Length: 457
Image 1 (cartoon, rainbow, N blue to C red):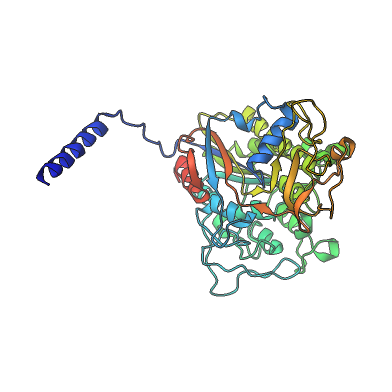
Image 2 (image 1 turned 90 degrees about the vertical axis):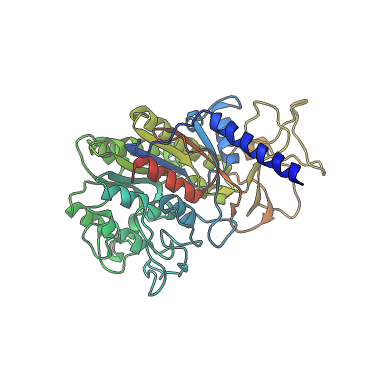
């Protein structure tokens, strides 16, 4: 027994000596990032990233986001669900706090409460407390802050950066928190967001002007009265001198912005996400203390809910083009770029298609190039969904023309009115100042801490 104790002690000493002999790891330098751009591809799970890459660049190609140095795997579960919705997941990135589904940037004990039909009705009494967001902390340190999205600016992802509500559908209350000095303003934003761009004017306009606000307020006019140039079309943004402005609000549609496929095809006078991102960087860069910018490719998620892979992939490429535009403008020696998603979806890449087969087409065998068939002899597509609306009682063959059409909805395993989010981990890619800690498997709340540390907040 005494001999065993001596061996154990000796092994402990040897292990300690071995550890001491290892070279010291470089310390993470807090505050090395002057600026942060946080890119969020809503619903952009791993299969969507892969499919978008193949769709645009082929199997051997690379997206702009995939050229960043660091990668990690992110757990996305919410406080009360295995599969999160966008509100608590984006809030976890922005606050470091796990919260319940539907809740935006509040404490973990906050209960989700359905708002009124006009998007009003916040938390009520004794129901949680606001959790400080990354943009609020940055503003308190004198940095410029902004949010850009292809959804309504009141939607869950952008809302999590600047607002605190108990239900994501309280969109009239959400946008009121962004108007400096107005009723309901979020004073934690100091003198306000410096950039806010996206869609959703219906929650900024009174009912008399075709909006949803029952309080009679016209928030576009209120923003203008506070010194914000207010832009409403893509032409407005093209004519806007972003390099001479210190703030801007751009609301480019009544609801969400158009899918990228439709924006281009139908020549809709709305800006691309890349154009909004470039303008936002120009505005924010004039702040000598740096900036924090959130950019969301939000309609990726909407197309996936509709099991319309073609629009999901074109929006994912538009999102990647925004990343490319940002990387061309910033200095990674002082700027941290983070790209991730808030949750997965149920889309998957199946079968054994030959290399070079269009990813949104029917599956064609790598052996002979012929259409692949299921056990009953029916042709199927490479991309399918675990659930959603397009489930027929009996499968029939899909032809290539139908599968590659703009409006084609991929088949689903379980029939639901709308496809659900997936609970799988998502990817994170990062590069630039302060990016060394983004590696391994992390909870989404951990991302907040790393970004905060990189900024020295």
